[in-house]
Image 1 (cartoon, rainbow, N blue to C red):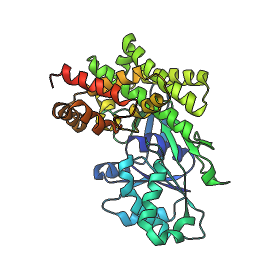
Image 2: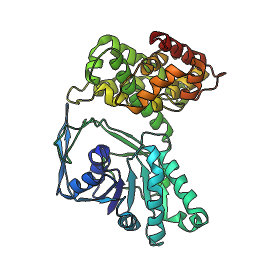
Image 3: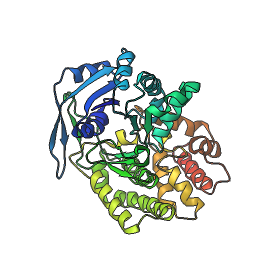
Image 4: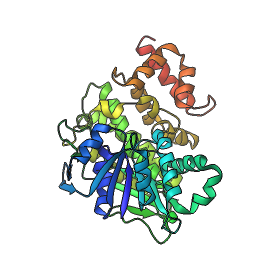
Length: 384
C-alpha cells in the first residue's frame, strides 16, 4: 500500500505521515521546499518525539520525498498508483495540489480501487474544496475520472510547536491527537489508519475542534501577548488569563450544544482536556507563533467571529468571545505581515469600515455593533 502526502512539514511528518506509516503505507512526501525534500531523502528514518505525560518516541521508516516544483511528473506517477492521498498544506494551497491529483487520476488504471483523498487542514470542508478544484480543472473530462477517486472530509487535531533548530527531520509533538474521518464515502473499504476514527456525520467533530481547540489556542495567544507573556503554557498558568480563555470556550460549547445536541458534560471534559494540553510546559509554543495571521483568525468563518456570530443569532452569550477579539486587535508583531496590516487598517479606517472589512459581518448582524465597539475602543487606546 502507498500513500502520497502533500506537505512534508511538521504536521505532515509528525502526525498524518506517522499514522499512515503505522497503517502500513509506504510514504511519499510531496513538497516544494528543496532543502526539506533533500533532508528527508537523506534520512533512512526519523523520530517523532511525544513530549509531556504519556509521551514516547516513535521511529518512522519507509518514506521518500519528491520536490513537486521540480518534478511534478514524478508526483503524478506516484498518485496514479497510490491507495491514499492526504494533504497538510493549508487551505489556500489546495488549488496548487489539485492539478497534480487530477493528472494522477487521468493516468490511473480504471479497474484499480478508487484513490482515497483526504485534506487534513484546519478548515471546514477542506476535502470538498480540494474536490471542487479538481472537478473545475477537469471540466468535461470529469465524468470519465469521477469513479477513480473518493473524497472524505476530516477533522485533525495535534499540537506541533515550532521545532528546535538542528533536529533535522525529527519532529516534537504532544502525545494527544485526534483524526476524525467521514465514513460514508468509503463504503465497505475505509483506509487503514490506526488511531483515526470514522464517523457518519463529521460536522459536529469539525466544529467542536475548531471552536474549542483553535478558538482556545488563539485566545490564549492574544490574551498572553496583551499581558506580556511569552509562551502559551505561561499564559494558562496565570489564573486571570486562564479564566478568560475558559469563559470564551464555555460560550463556544453552549453553541455546540445548542446546534449539534452535544452533551454539555462531555463538552466540559473536552474543554478541560484542551486546556491541560495547552498548559503542557514541555511544548515550547510561543504566543507569537500561535497568534500570527490575526486577520485570518478574525475573518467571518474562523474561530472567533464564526462561533460568536452563530451564538449571537441564537441569543446566546458572546461577551468572552468579544473580549478575545479585543485582545486579537491589540496583537502587534512587526514580524507577522498580517499583524502589521491589522494595525495599519486600525489607523487608516473608521470602526464601521474596519469591522465590515475584517470580520465580513453585515452592519445589521447582531454581532456587528459589539465588534464595532471593541474596534473603536482599540483605536482610542492606541490614539488612532
